[in-house]
Image (tube, rainbow, N blue to C red):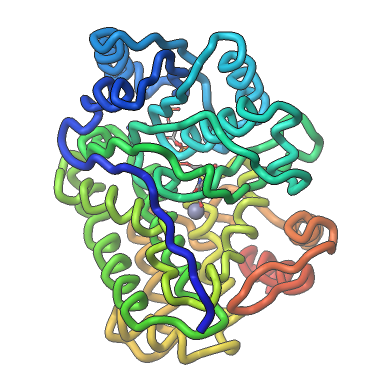
Length: 391
Ligand code: NZQ
Ligand code: ZN
């Protein structure tokens, strides 16, 4: 078995009122001026932003606002943030919002630290050299960006637009203030989409090519079961604290590396690559895009290692038939109103669209993806065709 790294330096404060620690924690870090980064309205509507600003005032910390982050966050807004950080002597970036806000904050941090074109990091031309420190008050349980090493950005300055991620330990944020109550106002669709993303971060790691630890597999089963239990509760009662709390913590540990400890690789990640092409081109919600793809991916790769699917099914559903296991996951997605095919995303894909998307994933046939099963352009095309009901 190879050597696997597990590094989670983020200081987590979890529970009711966690967001009220912002001023105190920032002061403890010696921060003078913060870039307050947020989305398109929810944190103003909920009054959270106001409360954070009062807290910063009370602690003598200055701030500049930069709102407007949209889902599938755009590089153009991050560039504005980079300029603000440099011109206003900002020494900390506080992301108040969901994964998109946090990823944009990370991007600003990398760009402001080193100069040059920040997109270089996302297209692999340069390695991230450092960051202006970032922290978060999270308002949506989904991406795990609050403990992950990733930032995923959309380049809206090119045609076609590109969505690319960069993984670096500089992306592990200083602190995450996690109050599940802040997620009470998340819509049903975003709640379900977030839960799907949480499940997928564990499933992507479960499907790897080599050896692994039983301990890690069993953690994965527990996490998947918990998310499938808590999500319908949060949907039917958005203010169910326990359900929201379980989802929030599941989101963090699903993507902080814990679910890959002992694996011979970081996992498969094909569904993420295949999905990112959809959210880049068609701006769909990331989790919904994953739900639309997963079943087709699973059927396509099943024979690579059926035993792995058997183990998953037995661990999660007490089900030893792998085909039924795939159907059970799809039934769960349907039960929370997630799509299980591309049509369910409101898109109609023909063969040409499948081909174009497949070539997008492999950067015009320049790379393969996956680890459980390595996929080339043709394989990805077949998966898009299956997900479009054309195969
Ligand atoms: O803009 P506002 O008004 O805040 O509205 C947001 C947004 O419209 C809303 N929202 C957030 N918190 C809310 C709320 N509405 C009401 N009440 C609240 N408390 O929800 C909408 C979606 O927000 P977004 O941040 O886009 O969602 P999510 O957290 O799912 O982030 C998705 C992005 O993260 C990337 C995805 O690709 C996508 O771009 N990912 C990042 C990862 C990482 N950095 O580790 C890993 C993931 O695999 C993923 O790729
Ligand atoms: Zn994801």
